Amino acid sequence: MIKFESVVKKYPDGTVAVNGLDLVAPSGKITVFVGPSGCGKTTSLRMINRMIEPTSGTIWLDDQDTGKVDASTLRRGIGYVIQHAGLFPHRTIVDNVATVPLLLGRDKKKARSQAIELMERVGLPASFAKRYPAQLSGGQQQRVGVARALAADPPVMLMDEPFSAVDPVVRAELQDEFLRLQSELGKTIIFVTHDIDEAVKLGDQVAVLKVGGTLAQLASPATLLTDPVDDFVAGFVGRDRGYRALGFESGQLDPDTEQTVKLGDDAAAVGRAARDGWSLAVDDARRPLGWVRAAALAEGKQVTPELLHRGGTLAPVSGSLRGALDAALSSPAGRGVLIDDNGALVGTVTASEVVQRIESQLAGRRNGSDG
Image (cartoon, rainbow, N blue to C red; front, side, top):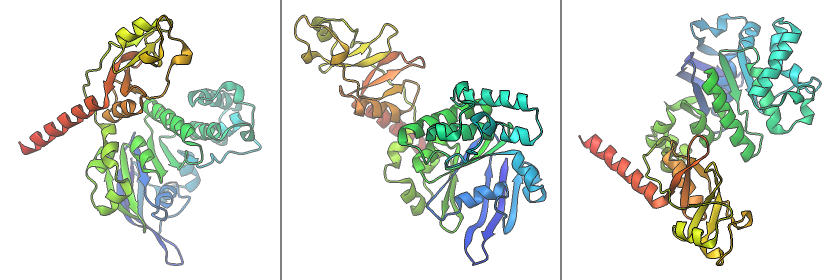
């Protein structure tokens, strides 16, 4: 657990970066600090490991007052990941990852062996061990930064906009990998971002800060989206917060399973399977391959890869209503493809079917509150 008690940071010129911050970051959970530039996000983060010293107030790490712990000792027990990874350019990847264990006096051979295991855990091949940071892409360097922060197995990790310097596709991959790791490791994490979408995706709780370093709201992502405490939070979260909130709503959908074909099927088979003029091609394991338009097949012609329309996202059937709705809206056939945990087709749904489920849940919520 990390606890801020009336924490203030005031600089000599009179600037107040953080003003009376009170909050608790629970053990084993991700707490995200988000807010506009100048709201004290990074300052608050760096006061935890005393890279910046608080002017007043107390920061607790479990039952320890961090202000009474030797700063170097404190930092060695806290993982720290920053934007652009902050790797040592003259050290190999394996030695970058092993930095803290080596500083702690661990056996060099064992530290490097564990570093390679960590590289693989964050999605980097062992063959990268002897490369240098300049030989890696930005996304790969960020993975090294995460591995280095994990190397001493710290209970606490501080992450300061670690994924903001990479392109959107890589960023999404890193976020997913980060969540996978957290599900396995259960660290206590403070994560700083300026991106509200990243905050609600990653956070178990989200702290929205105002300029001047005051806390506007601390809440779960779902609560933040559906019940912002004031106009500032509502404006910062954004006008499409209702759509984002669907990411936390699951629904029992009744997908259609009667429109699948295989590569090599002829026009007659496609026509029999078609719904709204489209059939979905799947492989032998029922993994979706793409959509085929029935009208595009002349009599006797077969389904080939060249005829497939591959647009549209795939949504896990156990996932959120937002995912199902996005799959339907992005599909060239107007039907969202729902898959199981193995990537096999469960069925397809239209946007109107998802909306009906949303309306049903809203009605249930209203009736429940009325009662």
